[in-house]
Length: 287
Image (cartoon, rainbow, N blue to C red; front, side, top):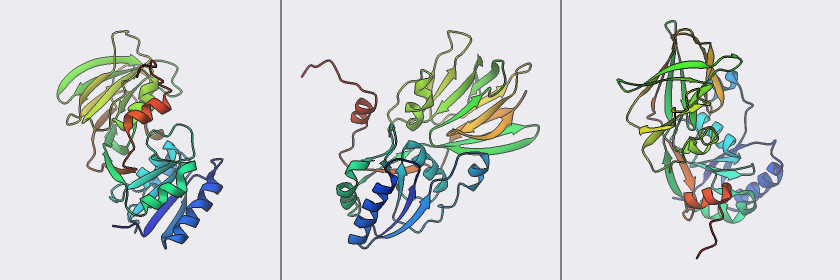
């Protein structure tokens, strides 16, 4: 099925945004495509509450034009719509974007002919319960429990399903999807996970015990984290957006969401080629 209606979320703060927008407008005009242009929103807690404006988008494709951050925000705004999201990278790394800014014209001609594949990405549902009140969140990359401005380590009792795992004393903890394994989790020492794997990773940030290591668990299991007594306060973030403050006895529950994200890629896109390019892996020169 040809693409005839698109929504474009563009981050105008990026250096090449205007040039990329002009190229897209030219291609859309030549192919009779109806385009609805939206600006990327600033970050923050208030913004998180507004991230739903694309759920009823009347479109065949949503295009996120910026970097991975723009695509993440677009995924939040379009959550539950079922419309595929294509990322055009005019940002920095671009692990989940498919098209480079310099390839826009040729790539879009193919995309508009539906010459793309869908990678359905795992997402997370998060409940944060504090004193009987529950805040809810959703994430494509990760949920982070951080100590924030608290000068002390936080202590978290972790359970996987009904089974106790361990007690972490750390600066924070990251629960990441395979998509999020190349984001904050990677910087904190977590493993790189193929998006085809049905797993989640639990990675402590600067743990006090050197034996605390990242753990890979099955995606069917729920993770429960309770702030231990005597620990300081902290904050919960989803994809870098703060959704709740937490304190002693706060409980954070994380599980796989029914709202997975359909991300569009050119058919020749290879995840391992992306890793090699973005991480500067050059190999050993053997053929």
